[in-house]
Length: 415
Image 1 (cartoon, rainbow, N blue to C red):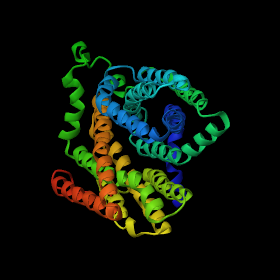
Image 2: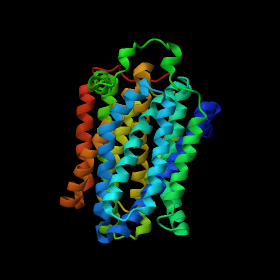
Image 3: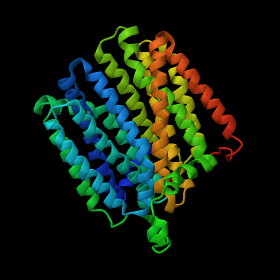
Image 4: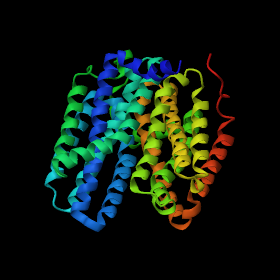
């Protein structure tokens, strides 16, 4: 039974259109790993002791691009050829990444990285909105599970692969391999069916010409639909809970392992690998579990799990910490996967692009709040940062549950 559950997500590859989308996503994710390892090495080469500041500003530009541009990307995903959007994004990213080996100034890094992430802000929501269009309702949970599991697995393995490539080819040459991954992704998407829009296939003449204008109201419509729907609003607020605990882990684990436990750098790698493995395992199991557990139950269980897991971390040894991070990673992915499925279930096909775009922006805005909170706690309350941060997450969770429990149907087991 367990083996069958783990293999469930792979059955989605029987759908040939999804299989090609999945191959394109996997290649693109490998490119992302190469990008960030190469960027870290390049930042050190250009800035030396200022490399941390360079990386921090580059990450700020990344989130800024996502928050500002993904709602517009969602509108365009509902109006234009999704295949064209994703191929264009891959081609531009290929060209920009191909320029990184030639930079000589830090400002050039900032300009190129903002451009790369601007087009990632167009690619990712379009990709997310395309999955419900090319899969059936039964296939979608498994497709999302496989997609998310691959994302998490490459998050664990990708940096190691990228570091090996950099050691073999050199810091700057890694970007040429990186650029090639986006070329491969673009070619795979180019071979897909013409438009990848379920709404247009069902009613090709449904939208009047004047509806094709991109206005401020159209850009904000995804946010309006996202917050108006009680179920999606509930899930989005629980993503804020997950962002708080996730930011604590990403920001403060290194201080806990190296500063408080006085363990070597390799043990930090073990702990973060446990977090990624937990997220990967949850993604592989989610396709089967969500057939038995309501999505609203799944998302709140994930938020509880990841919040509770961080609470005792300041007083944990290595092995207990790895176990806690395994649970926290599983909880993080449970929240994220259930939210994506709920958006597909709660939004009509004609508006899924803009809702996924708005969700992409809001979910990254949560992290823009959570990162400074985690940094503040790590700086001023290092010995209790996870306890205090976990308490904040639980307070947000309690408030969300109290506000949302009356506006959504009570969670129930699926038959």
